[in-house]
Amino acid sequence: MTPTALGTVRHDWTLPEVMSVMTLPLMDLLYHAQRVHRENHEPNTVQMSTLLSIKTGACPEDCAYCPQSVRYDTGLEREELMEVAAVRERALRAREAGATRFCMGAAYRSPKSKELRVIAQMVREVSALGLETCATLGMLTPEQACELKDAGLDYYNHNLDTSPEFYGQIITTRTYQDRLDTLEAVRAADIKVCCGGILGMGESADDRARLLMTLANLPQHPESVPINQLVQVPGTPLDGAAPVDPLDFVRTIAAARLMMPRAHVRLSAGRQGMSDELQALCFLAGANSIFYGEKLLTTGNPDVDRDRSLLARLGLRPESSPGTRNEETAA
Ligand code: SAM
Ligand code: DTB
Ligand code: SF4
Image (tube, rainbow, N blue to C red):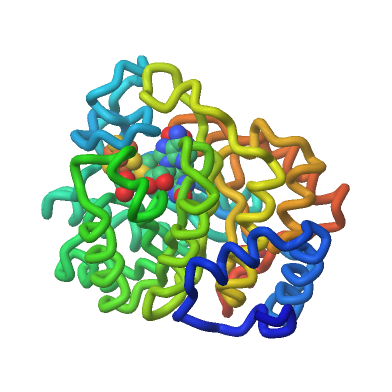
């Protein structure tokens, strides 16, 4: 593949092609990633999403990375589904702090219809504040996806997490195909897709390439691609896993940028342990979205002051939300 061909929208990536991108000399990889980034996105802007765990812990699934699984003793206090008014209040605070998207996460395998009705109301209220809405609630049926769409949901987050080949070593309680089915239901309901994975779970370079290949070869690229670095939580099976080489993390972001040129690539979990300089390299590699606010779902994230100072040091500015919503936010 010639370097100039990099950055076209394609859905037919082969593993040797992805590997050839990921193993380019780092400066060439960064150069092309930044070039393609600028062809497709406003430079020097970062989309800011705030997360809230609306139902915490006691999840029946066995995801080996997750502090919220009922199977691992992580000392996490479980919390029932929050009240709609309390979620609205948190969304208001996130908007005041400068977030433009509010993502509600629940520790479910899949939501029950009674729960979904409450969450749909949360989506309505958050949307009325002029924020983009996102939810991550586990597996959805096509009908449930339509119910969320009717409530005004903009994005649904459902990660593939890793390659199809490595997946079985991380999760046994749902299949890769289950995840693909939920993504299809979300697409069919005309909700934007947020889908990515986690690095640092003991996967190989091949697995990282296969994760990106699976994402890029979906019928339509996800609008948002979160690349998480594993947050190691004592009590989970993956606590103590060998950390990913930071430059391999940067390479994965750059390859995501080149393979899904129009997507927002989110530098997601794991920023708390990263230097400003490593984060700068991730932005240079094409990341243009972050989670913003002291907490992810149950673990820490850089505080707002640190992120404001990081953006100022790098000359980055928050991306404004689409359409007229921006005026509402500024009001
Ligand atoms: N229960 C729902 C599900 O799994 O689809 C939604 C919430 S779940 C916490 C959302 C995503 O968070 C997971 O798919 C995983 O990619 C990410 N995640 C969870 N724990 C993590 C950790 N310790 N480090 C990095 N990412 C993590
Ligand atoms: C995603 O890709 N990362 C976020 C969000 N989507 C839901 C979650 C990160 C969770 C990190 C561990 C925790 O805080 O519990
Ligand atoms: Fe449950 Fe989601 Fe955590 Fe898996 S990642 S254990 S499904 S909350």
